[in-house]
Image 1: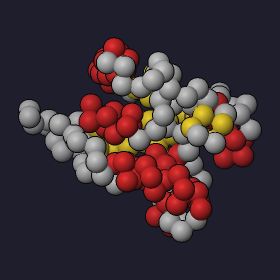
Image 2 (image 1 turned 180 degrees about the horizontal axis):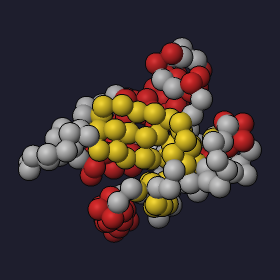
Image 3 (image 1 turned 45 degrees about the vertical axis):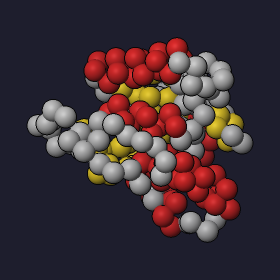
Length: 179
């Protein structure tokens, strides 16, 4: 592997509820930090209640800071696609609404190209029964979620949502083979 001189890069993914996305990437080797938040909409500094209303255009997502010397952007994409359903439009399981749309927010042309190629490859290989519905959008601004959403799984492991939705995704993560 070619050593990357940058010690930290950022990826932003929306894979349904940001509690899930945060828990998954917080458990991924090479990830430095994960911050749940909102991106892609037209409302500045939205609240959780506004985003849940479905009229802001924002997606629940997670800002992932990672060390590219330990985990590549491509491997982050692999984790992303293997831990949520990228074929579902405007939702993940029972979490329904445009705020749960599977989305990759890219911050540069390289991320966009890698994401586009990754999706094309998955579709050609028919990895999923349906065509991938993940949107690839430029990152304009990221708004951190309220404090009570941060490290939600870590603080609420016994909550039914965490047990029924997040735990199975974390179990999947254990079996993902990264390059």
